[in-house]
Length: 173
Image 1 (spheres, one colour):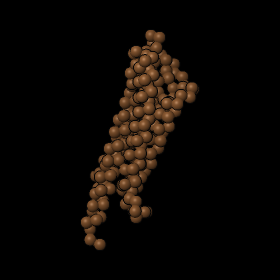
Image 2 (image 1 turned 180 degrees about the vertical axis):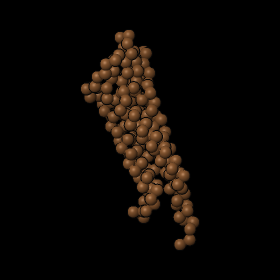
Image 3 (image 1 turned 120 degrees about the vertical axis):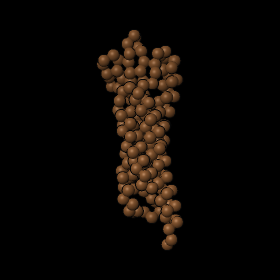
Image 4 (image 1 turned 90 degrees about the vertical axis):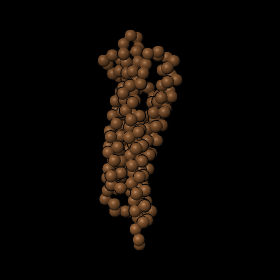
């Protein structure tokens, strides 16, 4: 059980760091505009060597930002719950800590999936027609890797929960 929780905690740390880095960096997309390279993230865009805040309130950017922030918060609270799961002092008899930690990581994975799906759909449909020379960049890719890491953290904690339940049911009372 502890090896699953350790693996889950490792995946959670890596996934949360990647989520935060992907959310705050400005390399979600790169494109060529008027002969110079430009890149943009969720918070600002850069043309050449000058960066500007994205002051216009575009719905898909706002939705992507909100879901990425929610995902980071779920993953961070999942890490805290995962550390507390090692203590194994149940405060509720019907809700185990590894189970609730796994649920938090699955929620984080769903939020980042929603954020990336919204960003991908709008970016491909809008920028695909507007710019011929564009591509997704490393911040965007970090978001997908963070999705996998938080999902696997949830899997590890659910496996730890199942092992704990099987062990608890097999011991005589």
